[in-house]
Image 1 (cartoon, rainbow, N blue to C red):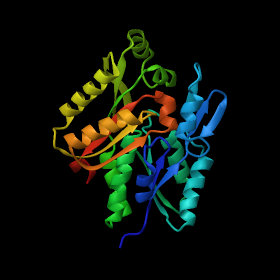
Image 2: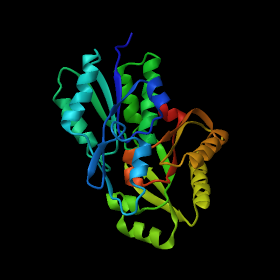
Image 3: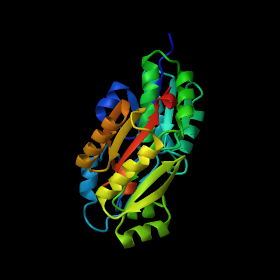
Image 4: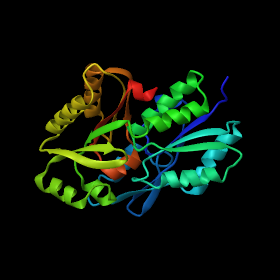
Length: 287
């Protein structure tokens, strides 16, 4: 019988509470700045509180990675419970310094086996790698098997999203300022892709409905209808539109797994409210 191991994701992962509980996925906190105040996402700042705080015009938002001390607290809590093998899944290094902090902290704990994997993604991309590891663990797979699976999946989980504006991404430096200015001048809705750790606009459409339709077209070009996939729908304070997209995904494809999640304050601080998106991977890439 394989030894038990823990799965840890950082605060950019998008997981509904029931899925997190089902697969016993632990969270590493990330921080959100709102004006001059700093909060810890999902500790002293819920998604609802975050969107309420940023509703006023001109409110500046930002994010910051955990400290080594906070990483150590997460690791120590797991080790104290008797688990010394930890798989840690982080946002892509291009988007955050979390991987570096998590890795450096792991090196300071020689009594535990801690493997930190750069998922080359964020939000739902991290979540699908985590649930794949959870299924493997549930079926008796080993820690080494889970680490190998996470490394194989890194960069293979695809993500498309429709944003209301590029303004928040421009502020965070995640897309070019020129692209953000162009989008705001024309009042278009950008369609974003996360590809191997890089967020970039792939198209711009004038209305939200047309943007969602275009996102569906792009997904259809990547994966044939009826294909067996693992998928999740994510959003930032846009549950109704997310529900419509989730229904379309499940009707269009053979979803071996699907869940819908609020992306949370960390992603919301980078993208702003009104984002809807889909992350998915093919069955063969999640085995």
